[in-house]
Length: 120
Image 1 (cartoon, rainbow, N blue to C red):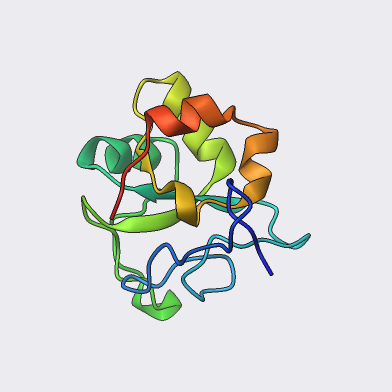
Image 2: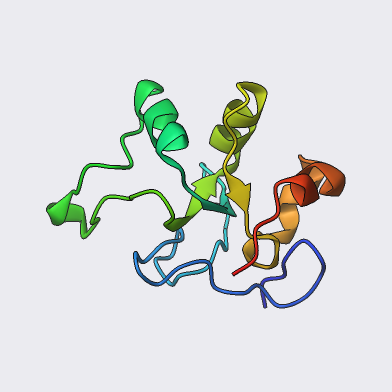
């Protein structure tokens, strides 16, 4: 069973829009997930623009991929490297800690994540 950063069962991040590497709503991962879609975030307009400028348009719907496009306030399993990049640029979105995979604390200090905590 996948664990969150506190060692508890991983709580779903979002089912609407449906997120996660496995498209099961959870920020779970495996060896095939090269992007490490492990950090559950609540996106903002500023972050969506930042991501688009970096070549990953998360706002535009992609019907062929069953992707509705994200809007501010949506929760999403984000690639770990993108969050770190946004953090370094001062644009990191808030993090839903109970829905963030345990592996994230190998790369980001818990104290940093807790500063960005959002509750649902």
